[in-house]
Length: 399
Image 1 (tube, rainbow, N blue to C red):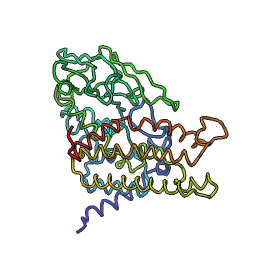
Image 2: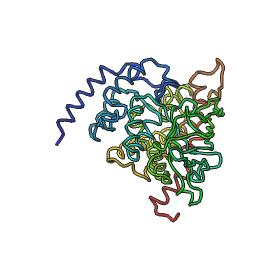
Image 3: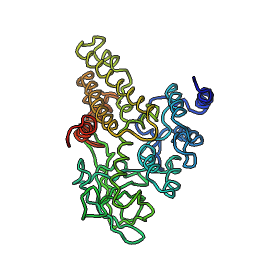
Image 4: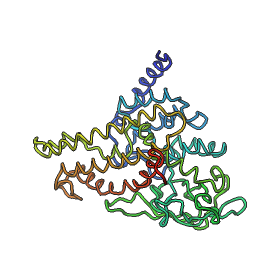
């Protein structure tokens, strides 16, 4: 029997979205128009500010968070209705970034009452942009080998060390950072999880220029940075537990669903035409049967991933399933690389344009994304690490 309250909520939500979601926020997002929090880098699309303000007023930037922390307080069923109605009009996410998708959900589980009260409302309102201080020059896939240290100074920790591949560090306001607080115990047991401002004395960043010409990543350096103990998350030397939970949120793919499918890497790689139409355009109407079969297989895999993510979201209550997050991360990485390889085959020599009037903006953009995609099976946890997790937790193979 259907819940009449859901039907009423759907009707009210549909009407509210129709009245408050600008037409420009129902189109495909282009680079620079996203809203990831903070004021150091805002959207190039003015209507994004209007859309964000409207959604903040409803708590729908973080629909399932408690209202006291700036969220919408929606249960799972009402949340799914909101997603469905946003998808129906192809609404963009009002807010993305690591605050909403990573540290926010983690603080809901592990943060102290004070930490939740200080940080979550500012995340939900888009006031702050966050970055992730995990990887180091000598600690990538083997993250627990990190060497950045935090020394207990009574009321605060003194942090020294460095991080690398820190996405968005140059325009982030705060960082969630893994540090070593005990070097005398097994490596997983001496790690703590800290939060601190990127404007703290002693914090510096240096952008890393990539092969595609962009600099989304940074080297980040900590030189005697003082971090109040109020921003130690969970307990000292137990940060590894928090770090693993945060990675589940990052890799689950649920954040993309919560964005109505309009954000993230899958949105960025979508060409202006569906792949079959794109192939016909470049082939002048004659579609090679082998390429047609490859496109069909790709679309089937992408659809299967999306449906599986939606089912997992519908089945989830409060906990993100552990092994499923690794499956989603691995499969999505392979789908992204495959899709951009298909675009390369479709465009032929037009796929290799770097600049110049003989190449369209989309050809140049997608060519650079193809170069960037080579890192996706490493970033956020390498494919090999994800396969190891799947082997242990799903197949029951020995470690």
